[in-house]
Image 1: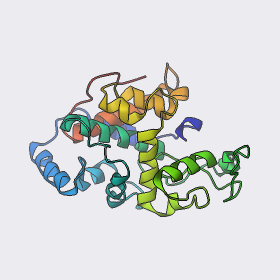
Image 2 (image 1 turned 180 degrees about the horizontal axis):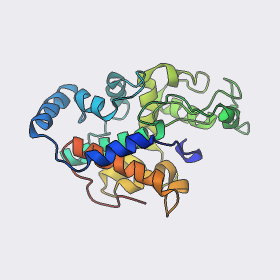
Image 3 (image 1 turned 30 degrees about the vertical axis):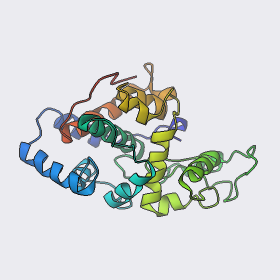
Image 4 (image 1 turned 180 degrees about the vertical axis):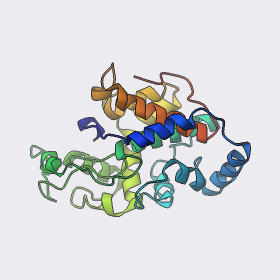
Length: 246
């Protein structure tokens, strides 16, 4: 999971983030996006998604994301419109950071692959010692996380971990599993942090608090924050209450 390593976001993307924070969203563009979002049933329209991730890997489709929403119907669907938008923006900001703007489907450091098999678990690593490397929007890793996510989603990921890099909807579902059910390095899930008004900073803590909070790795932490600021602006809201950082 994200707490086991840091993925570097592209410097160019960070520069784009800074440049986009200064100006307001066009009312016409905002209105068009709202109509499109209503059509999909998700607070982020396909047009907005494509603007957020112009250089994404084609694997990460908007249809895959919206197809995964049924696994966690409370995601970006709890609270008022601003809360829903902030939660969607927070999730997408974190996965953007984890994957370099949705560029990477699998973990890039192949030397790490054999590391993610915990043989102390009774179910072992039936797909192989090196089969449980980081995949998908939250870079799901370790045999026990594949089992837990698969059990929750009713998909046998312990025996078939490659589904997370072959099926876009499955990949997005694993990201939503982490977001909605795992506190990670934090004290609550990222979903709860956003709908309870605890702030975006608490989602950073859940994703990689051991390495990015309390003054550690400020560039990594600030990249997540800048992406969040960019995305909430695109969705026509603000950063909301609570702690922006951790």
